[in-house]
Image 1 (cartoon, one colour):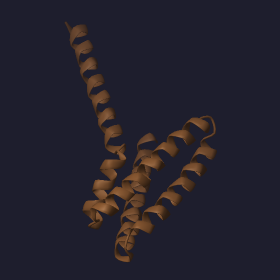
Image 2 (image 1 turned 90 degrees about the vertical axis):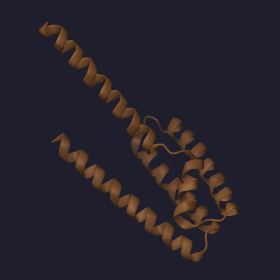
Image 3 (image 1 turned 90 degrees about the horizontal axis):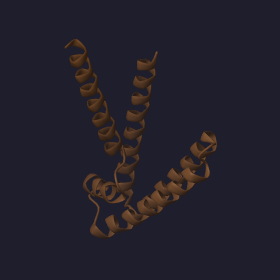
Image 4 (image 1 turned 120 degrees about the vertical axis):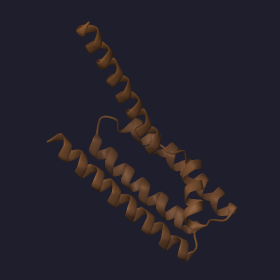
Length: 128
């Protein structure tokens, strides 16, 4: 009886961890369309701006996929390539925005970076 209960408990927690991991991945992997919609809402974009930004984000997603497959074994090269791609994408997006929208966009990116650093810190603490 105890072995059966133990097995069921292990299976239950395994399923919970799998579902949690899937939810984390999905939350972090927004599609270019979802990203554009989020920016539309946050920056009060016009439909034309949203369409242009969606195209920029789709191109960036394709390029990032290519970079990941090319630099699969070299994490430092991948990190540098992705950083360059992010800067390029930000520059392209800012050409579509008004001056006020660009300031808000910079603030959103700054807040995102701060959240990511905080998450990295929390992850580092939990591993110690």
